[in-house]
Image (tube, rainbow, N blue to C red; front, top):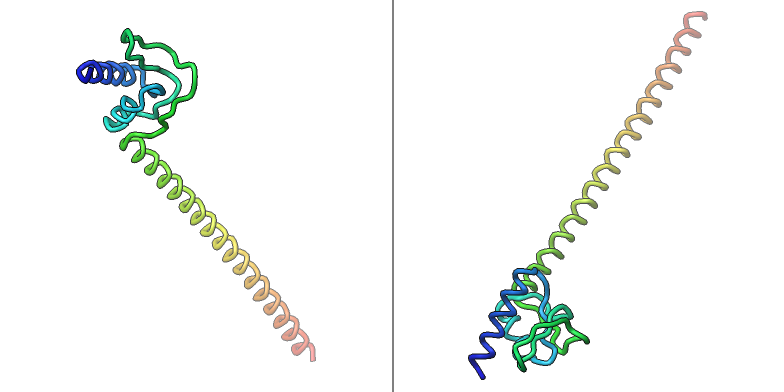
Length: 131
């Protein structure tokens, strides 16, 4: 019985690796946990393993085992970290752009004030010259 189980695990793992899909072992949680230990993807509704007759077919229902292997868990964590990094980078870029815009606006305002002061000075000088 143990050798049959090992054979089935190997067959299913090979098939799932070739097809790049998840393996469903709803009626056999031991197979599901073994596959998860091997680093397989989620045990869901694509393949169903039967001990009777060594048959591989499509699954009819959802599986009892929803665990992920260690490789999948690492991949999920890495994806989440990447998303967080991207969000932080976007926020930083937006902040930098806003700061640049503010600085430009401030510079323009200062320049306008300087121009107004110059004009006033020129007017005053003209008036003095007239007098």
